[in-house]
Amino acid sequence: MGAVERPGAGFRLTALAAALAAWALVAVGGVVRITRSGLGCPDWPLCKGNVVPGTRRDSIIEYSHRSTAAIVTVLVVLTAVWAWRRYRARRDVLWPALAAALLVPFQAVLGAVVVWLELPSWIVGVHFVVGLVFLAATVVTAVGAWRKRAPDAPPGLVRLVWGCALAGLALVCAGAAVVSAHADEACGREWPACNGAFVAGGIDPAIQVTHRMLAYLVLAVALVLPFAARRAGSLRRAAWLPLAACLVQVGLGIALVLTEDGTRAHKLVEGMHVAGSGVVWAAIVALAALAGPLRRAEPVNAR
Image 1: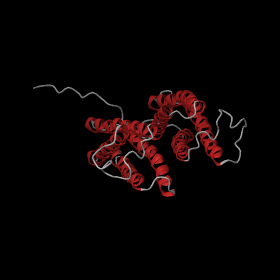
Image 2: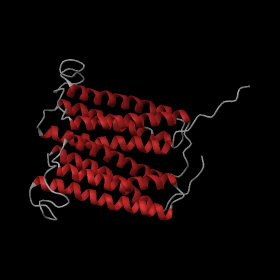
Image 3: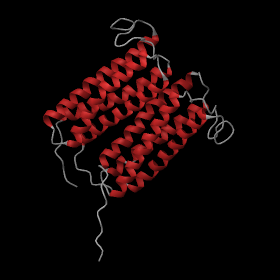
């Protein structure tokens, strides 16, 4: 395993702060949705014609999301400019940093459209998925900045890790579909069944069950990862992170189904579940970044 030139401590901390702030943005966005505060500031970029929100609870919550987005923007742009000027040779740092910076205006426009059109569900779902892609770019940048050695994971392990990442992307897209279709309660308070069967009741329960099945798939792959990486050196410990995050997230998902809608406990679990989706996704992406890109298998010469 060859050593790589690590960026300075200042850049590493900035990249890490950008990734943590991007996750916080996902979590605060979940709070906005749960509290139905998306129109707390019905105009954009101002809030009811003012630079700062009033005293209404929904306005403060929505404005906190915008304020977090502003902090994230500063950190991401700073990281990208820094990477371009000082670490252009480190493509594993430069390209994801630039990708995150390019996603900032796109995500901002989506957020503005969500407000201007008064929360159309499909744009809300797209906004969430793009937010998680944005989070992935910041995580890859941070992992590249902190990594001490070049990745040398076995090809089979790399394929397994990236398969987990692909399943994780499908999972978050299905979660966005659940949000867009308002299918959170489509299966009632039943688990693992759905309306008295494996799935019954139309398209909304089918979306909910699809989300569940993908969650089980990601959990199954995450269960295999630590054992597949037991001889992979630096990946050995990191391979446990997706499993730990998945176990907590599945538990929160089950609790979300079993708690009564509208109660304080349900809202608390719902907020933790949204924040947890960012943790699961970040853990999987971080492991994929540590494992390195997919590589073609080397041909075996016949005797």
